[in-house]
Amino acid sequence: MNGNGILRAGRLELRVFDLEKSVDYYKNVIGLDVTAQDENRVYFKAWDEFDHHSLILQKSDSAGMDHMAFKVADHAALELLEYKIEQFGCKLSRISNRTRVAEGEAIRFQIPTGHYVELYTDIEHLGIATGSVNPDPWPDGLRGIAPHRLDHALLVGDDVKTTTRFFTEILGFKQSEKILSVDGEQMIGSFLTTTNKAHDIAFIKGPDAKLHHVGFYVDNWYEVLKAADILSKNKVEVEITPTRHGITRGQTVYFFDPSGNRNEAFASGYMTYADFPTITWTEDQIGAGIFYHRRELVESFNLALT
Amino acid sequence: MFRISINDKSFSCSEDNNLLKAARSQMVKVPYGCASGGCGMCKVKVLHGDYRMDMYSKQALTNQERENQQILLCKTYPLSHLEINLMKERVK
Ligand code: FES
Ligand SMILES: [Fe+2]
Image (cartoon, rainbow over all chains, first blue to last red; front, side, top):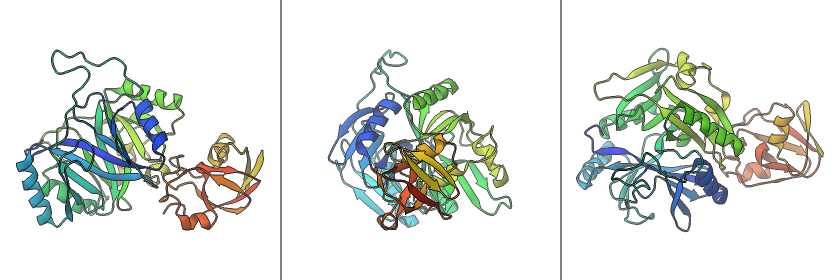
């Protein structure tokens, strides 16, 4: 946290049109644990996450992201942020206590790219199987890819510049990297962090309110390769086989869930600190920025959005 | 086995296989992204023939597009020979 009171990316709610297949996929292929369900939603957490859930699947007639939420340190920080967000001019509402399972009150607002973001501080604590006293490094009985956590999301929208200003000036995020048009006039991509991770949320220019992907964290390059093995074994559509990002320096594999939402197993990536400069990529080098080895984008990477 | 013609190319597809899978397995190039009915990249128009569709996103293919004989290759199963047209403007 960068002194802004926002601890981390806490949860993300996805719309799925085939709930049954999606639950099976997130449980057995991604390897998350189901922690609850209600009429229209199923709740999951990764084995290394302490809170009740980090991913929610919402039964819908389409795909995409309902919202992404960040966990705030306490109620005082939440109130201050609420005030600043309203001052900025975002449409803001309150989600009341227990609207969703295990969650306390949250504030919900629409950012300039049309996405909904929430901030919250209260959520039930479940803990992890290895415990918090003299823990083993990992528990027995892991399934599928078994990532440590929900890591980040890449969202698509038109006004990347104003959205970046909102995240940096109002929410206190740091911009770790940006993609600029060659003349430096337009911001095409923006990578933002509220921690020391290379990104917690990122934006790329395109049609408003779209989801590009949800990233789950795995430990290292071999785990990315193994994730790809697990995906192919389960006949999951893999879009980009294991490679490296220039941006974030992370290692990656991209694939799609049963409703066409893009997922990523993401490893490593550098740490950034408050005094580090923002890295700039120019649009003519965006291929290398995204896929460092291939050095060019693939068509579906720009166009397959939910 | 049904004959699927798509612009100037053709491939075969059984009624329990989706059109995208069949085209890819026969090296016929068609547009696609998610292969899961979510992104709409594989949207095409059926000119002739019968088919059935599995679940898909109503944002990827709207009800109006569906009434207009548009389909998602990744979620469509043939019930007869099909004649299909690739559309220029593929993504909404
Ligand atoms: S490829 Fe995405 S909807 Fe068919
Ligand atoms: Fe990512």
